Amino acid sequence: MSKLNQKEDFEILYNEFNKRVKDEKFEDSLSLVNNLLNIAESDIDIFYTLMGKSTVQTHLNKNDDAIITYNEIIEKFNKTSNKVIFKFLAYAYFNMALIYGKQNNLKKELETYNILLEKYIFD
Image 1: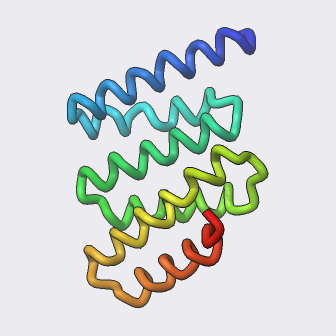
Image 2: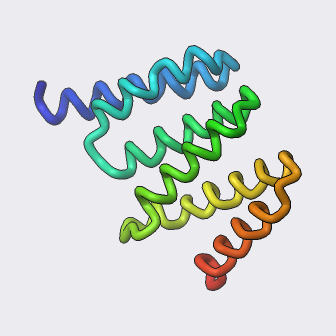
């Protein structure tokens, strides 16, 4: 498969993922994540796929799974030099803090908000 075809395949599959999310076919959308990750060529593709996965997990009330995914995102991209990823990484911290709050895990919620503030205080 050529690089161009692989990028086109990713875009087609990612659009299908988003369509399923929009149609609230959350389990169906999750079934596409591994394929998306397998054909992703760039960090931004991986980032958006994992963020989409965590969003779907949250919609399904799979909050522990969403936290695992957010931690995966943070671990993988914490030291990114990609400005787009860095900007949207803040949402991973914020959404994870919200989940901790929903779970009444106030200590983890506060820790996560503190990291978010330390990392993004200038934004």
